[in-house]
Structures are given as C-alpha cells and as structure tokens.
Image (tube, rainbow, N blue to C red; front, side, top):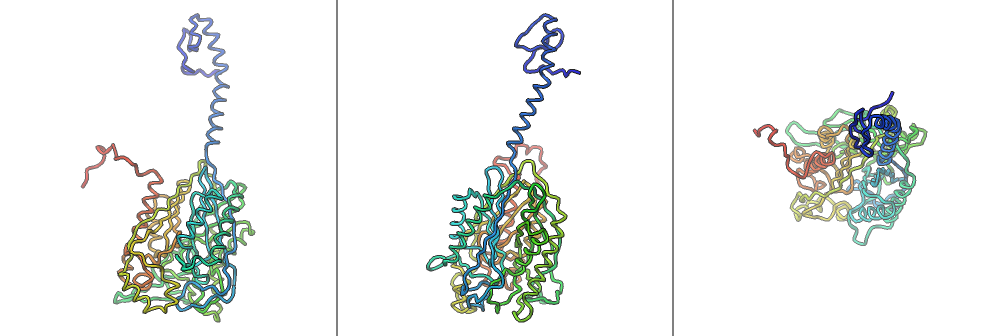
Length: 495
C-alpha cells in the first residue's frame, strides 16, 4: 500500500496526481512513472527525516545529573559554642563529627550546589561569597544554596570577625569547596521523585495564656499537644538510572536542641542520627540530608535535656523516629526521568529595615547579656539589611524556598498551600542568618523570637519574603510577562 503525499516538497498537481515541480512533466505516462518512483522514495526518506529530527530533539533535551559528597568540618576543641547565651566556654569534647553534605544538580549549562551544614547557622556574607566564587571558578557552579541544620552543639559563627575569620572556618570553606568539586566530577544521570509522610518529634514552644500573654515552654517531655506545628515531612529521592538511591533529602521543621547549655561536646544532634538511620536502611548507598524547615517556634520534645539524664538516648530517639518515617516514605517513592529537565534559580536580596531603635537595642542587649555573650551572639547593627531570598524550581515541578534565618512554622504551611506547584520544600537558615522571622500576629503577641532581641528585622519581614518567593516561582513558570495583557477586552470588568 503506497502512501500518497499531499503536494510533497513543493510538488504540483499533474494529470494523474502529484508530480515534482523540479520536472513539471506534462505527459501522463511520465507523470505516472515519476509519481510511482516518488512514492517509493518518499516513505523511507520521510522516515529518515523524522528519525533524525527525533534524535536531534533527544540530543537537545537536557538530562538531569547529580553528584554527592560529604566532608568533615568539626572545628578544634576550645572553640566557642553556638546556641545558648549562658554558655561561653569553648568545646571540650566530641560526641560525633560534624559534616558538610553536598548535592550537585546539573541540567544543560546550569549547575546548582546544595550544601547542608551541621552548624547552628550558615557562614557570614563574606565567607559565603568567597565559597560562591571558588565553586564557580573551580567547578562551574552557577548557583549555591548553603543551609545549616541549626543544631546547638557546634561552633559560634559570626558575620564579621575583628581579625578575620578563624583558621578553622577558612579550612572548612576550602574543604567544602573541594567537596563540591568532587560531587561535580562524579555526577551521573538520575531520576527523581517526591513523597510525604509524618513524624511527631516536636512541639510549638510558644503558649498563649488566657490573658493573651505568651509563656515559653522550653521543654515538653510529656509530649503535650501544642499548636501550630507541622508534622509533615517531605522527601526528595534521587536515584541512579538503575534505581539505586543516590541522595535522600528529608525536609522537616524542628529545633535540634536536645542538648542544653551544659553540653560542651560537639554533636550533630538528631539530624545526624536521622541521616544514619536513612542511610543504613538503604544499605549505606545514598547520602542522606536533613533539610531544616521553618523551625523558628518549634522545639524537639526533649529540648534542653541535661547531660546526666540520658541526653544521647533522647537525641537518638528523635533521630530514629524521624529517620524511620523518612525511610518509610522514601521506600514508596517511584522515581522517574523528566524528558526535558530544567533548573531555575534566584537568590535576590530584599532590603528590610532594622526593627528597633539601634541605641536602645544595644542598651537592652547589654542589660540582658554579659559583654562576652554580646560579642558572640549580637551581629553588627545595620539600619537597612539586604536579606537574600532563595528560590529554585526543578523541572518546573519542585519548588525550593529559603529564608536567611529562623522563620516561624506558619510560613512553611502557608507557602505550601499557596505554591503553584505541587511539591514545595521550605528551607530556614539558608544563605545567611538574620535572626528570627515571626509572623505579624506573633510579633504582636511578643515572646522569645517574636519580641525579643533575637528578632532584628522589621515586623512583616517573613510575609514579604514569602510573597517575594511566590512571585519568583510564578515568574519561573512564565506566568508573568514583561508587557501588558493584550487580551484585556476579554477580561471581566473590574469590581
């Protein structure tokens, strides 16, 4: 059976059908002869054209590649420890090492590096910029997300140091940069999938009393229900093409504060224990990441456990509980290959004002803290701060939003409800540290993290950053144009 083309290749109609216009033969016989020959050649030729076009399309489509690496970043003993105002002594031991975990995603000409730190906060702006430049120069990294798990048994990190960064921080930055390069050099084609589960290891530490005042619940060993909390855990599973897991990212919101101020040994707290559970469950093949969420007002149940009350056991309970829930979720995820992968990224600053009168703030801070603690924990006062809002969109399906500090949990649940894509990961403590971000409602109520000296940025900063991130996601999806809508006549009238 022949396939009759419709005026193929600019053909003209002859007496007996279609003949090529290169010959324009009028005689019926010749036209028939050439027509038959043309039909005979057209089928395989057309097949070859479509085959070539298909191969070109496959070549032009970007595959997603990923690589992982892990490097130890434990500082020397004697380093001042982060997390508690009444702990100014340096570290005297090590319960478990601290790590930087690296994930590199690559699609086309874009390389995104995610660095997850076993630290209380990220490095300061100058250190992050030096890491960003080195990663770009040595590994071709276009975009960088640096996040801290926010455990309180690590070293003090400051935005600025009078005599420059300490030697251990400089060395850690070099190690992280080399780990990024190692991850880039070992990228492989991957398939991805997202799943959701639940874990109950934390509570909201702010209690609204009958008179409207706020009481702080610094521990909740009896696990009394509180509100608001977000028990949801989101898991991003990244597999090699044969289905073997390469990386498992667990997004969950809870302060890693199992240890109290009497703890003077380094520990990754429950995020480190969780990672071990997840990795062991998959034969130690993948690298696990604890992706901290909006934990500004969420504590782990056994917060501040004294070192003589089985604090290690309580740490491991939280890590194992979260880890088992993450494993159960990850095992059910069906990863897949996106035929045309894509990475969009934005890390744009948002100018926000200092919340307090600068001089009065300093006076109140020195009244509450001794000079040494003030020097350790209070960042230099700037009346206007440029807060980086991190937004990424993977394959136009997975959104990642990061805030540079401690957002309250409401921002996480609200963003997830408003996000225009199904899968949305919220990251706190990302690409900088600017204290707490309470909701406007919480700022009005007061309490630690809402009306205390740990809240530096203007009221409403969290809402502004959330809206800014949502705008970026819509922009990446192509929902906003740079010209007015030309179909305005078809729009409904304004109210």
